[in-house]
Image (cartoon, rainbow, N blue to C red):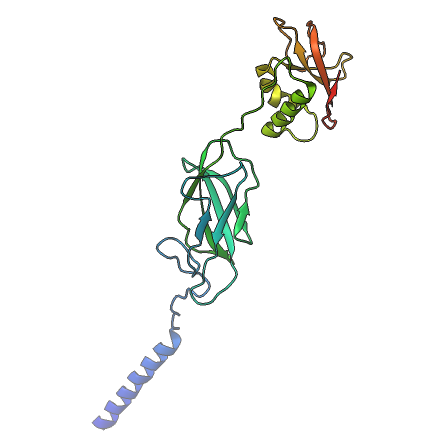
Length: 247
């Protein structure tokens, strides 16, 4: 009788243990299958950093819209096409522009300031994951071009050449506008010229040379300055394409 009771108690204890094991679900171990792990540098893409080709090493670029060039990154497990994120900052580290492109050459979509230093870097991007940043490149934009300054004895053709240089330098676009007149007025004043509206209030822009000693009124005044004009050039109405008609 004693042995039977002992066996019965052992069986019950085993059954109770099994019941507890079945009723308590196991918690699965955490997985990072869908969440890429971050490396020490913050990257989440298994790829190398791209290498900067140009401009680097304080190069002076040929214009204010340079093209930034890199070599492609390499995947750790297989060769694959990546997109590339480019980042451009000023010398103080403030972000100027950042773009992600499908290619190894980023033609800057903006005009930078003359004679200024900039820094840039790039990294591979794929399906929301980002690779490590490249090293940082630094370059300088060119100095502003020296304009061919005309004089009172210069021909109209020499004035026209100078005017085209001013328009190109200031990036005023293909049409006459109030903004274009304001952007170029300092250049005109530097060679003793100025802008003037039309005689009948039609806001026809004119470049003129006042008689020495005359103090012309501000640009965009509907009434013409009370100055005698040595020479006048009609460059078109506001909203029209620039032209060059000596008067």
